[in-house]
Amino acid sequence: MEVGQLQRSFVEFTESLFREGFLDAQFCQLQQLQDENNPDFVIEVVSLFFEDSEKLLNDLTRALDQQDVDFKKVDACVHQLKGSSSSIGAERVKNACIAFRNFCDELNIDACLRCLQHVKQEYLLVKNKLETLFRLEQQILAAGGAIPMVE
Image (cartoon, rainbow, N blue to C red; front, side, top):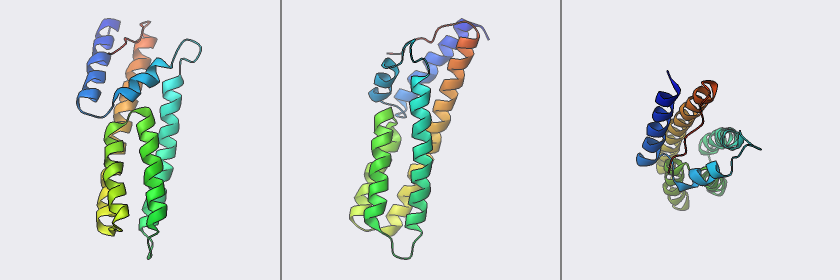
C-alpha cells in the first residue's frame, strides 16, 4: 500500500475511534506530548496502561470470586482502572468503570460481576483498536511517510 493510502486509512480509522466513543480528547493530549525526542511516548504510555489494566482485571476477577467479597478492595481496583483509562482517553472503559463503582457502593455482587464482564469487553475492544492504530503508524513510518495529525 502506498504512503498516501496508508495515511488516509490512519486518519479514517482514528476518526472512527473518536466517533464510536473508544477514545476522547485526552488521547489527543497524550499524542501532543510525543515529539522527536520521545517518538514512542504514546505507545509506551498505552503499553503501561495495558499491563496495569490486565493486572487490575485479574485482581477484580479474584476479588469477586471470594466467598466474602471485599467491596472496598473491588472499588479501589475499579477506581484505579477508571483513572488509568481516563488518563489515556479510553472513554468507553472509563464509562464502564463509573457504572461498576455505583454497584460497588450498593454491594451488589451480581451487578458487579456483569460490570466486570462489560469492563473486560470494553478493555479488549480498545486494546485491539489501539494495537491496530499502532500497526498502521508503523506501516506509514516503514513506507517513509509521516504520521498525519487528526483533529
